[in-house]
Length: 139
Image (tube, rainbow, N blue to C red):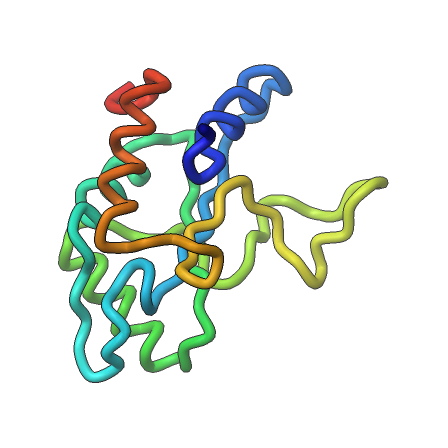
């Protein structure tokens, strides 16, 4: 099993001598409960997101169709919870290459989104367990 593509991402990072891994994270139904009137994080979100932030080799991208004022609220609540995002809905770090155009689809290694089958009530803890299993947690 390659939960959330984490094992593959870390393996490729090592093999290809990449400097970082990019994690795109959907907002509603993945990071926070889908009530637009309030912001409530799912279990283990804060712990995993803080871990992502503590790694110099992981950049996080908030992936959302929310309006700007909702995005500002999500960012504010995230900061209050002790974590931040490097980018919102884009990745300016990775630019076009001979083989890839990132103008319409930004580059990421891992996608966490309820529309892709992510189960937020349980999967944040599974991310931690997967990182422990592959020996990356707290490195």
